[in-house]
Image 1: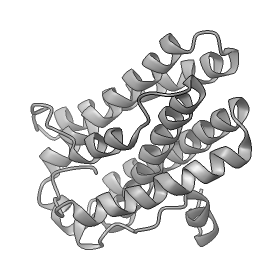
Image 2: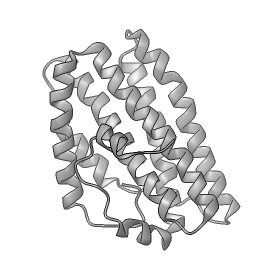
Image 3: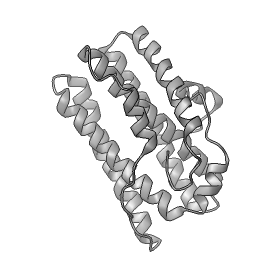
Length: 202
């Protein structure tokens, strides 16, 4: 699966990752793998929360159920990679990127708006993860890890698409597009403000 310029435009990210991030990540392999492991764990938990909260939405429950298993499988894959390299799974650290995204999420008002924001936030995290995994698959020196991260890149692209499709299943497509553009603008502002760190996946 090749992420072409067309696919990048579909992802819609307004600000690409600074190329220097991969160079920093190379020097912090244990930390980046640890952070990646916890990102996969949190992705599985987010899908479980959506299923629990919106159990009346059949397609959401059906489509996200296998994603829970897939994300947890990703966590196990990253954990195994740490163990193979005699590296340790460190402690989970504060995710400034996700925490700032959460602040943009609508907390009150209509349930439809809250569902839309939850799905779009998940889509955005998957899109950024996909872009970061692409950077690692192209920029790392370790050939095995390059292939390792290419598989993750392909998976995250599929998850991103799924969350957008779910949003459009339950909410008017025009409304989804308008709010998605707002999320993309806000995410770019967050990326500009965050310090460049090679020990974090986001």
